[in-house]
Image 1 (cartoon, one colour):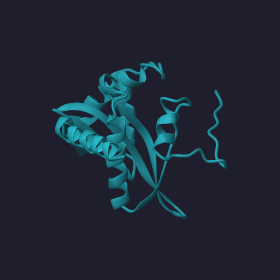
Image 2 (cartoon, helix red, strand yellow; image 1 turned 60 degrees about the vertical axis):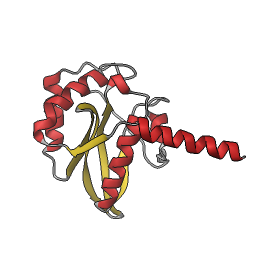
Image 3 (tube, rainbow, N blue to C red; image 1 turned 90 degrees about the vertical axis):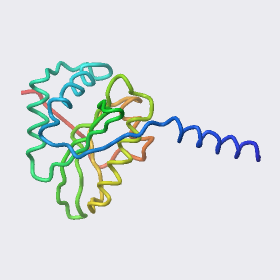
Image 4 (cartoon, rainbow, N blue to C red; image 1 turned 180 degrees about the horizontal axis):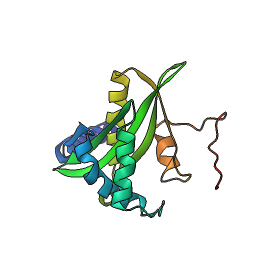
Length: 166
């Protein structure tokens, strides 16, 4: 038993010394082009396989930034973009709800814990703003839906996302 506790402490110490410092900043309009490049790389890759261009992604992200209550952060490590989260606050009768519109991680570092670190930072910032709930839409599957489930998100039984092509 003592060996296990020592092993856990040793892992924690190693993590502290090997973990690089991730820096966060609130997204500004001047960040859009850089974020759009990562966005295109991310969402044009599996599991999404979308067909974004940097111009269209920039337009989408700019539109989101110009909404009332827009808020987002971008994360850097060694001055390289790691990921971003962007969405907006909305009043609801139960309190302020935050709708995450986009969350993506640089393809080169996906699956290495960066998404968890960014989400944790974002949640702390939202809590400090008095936001009581986060809502998001994501693709079904372990690498997307499964990520959020591991972070404590649940599927709402009373809600469903539906669509129709016109």
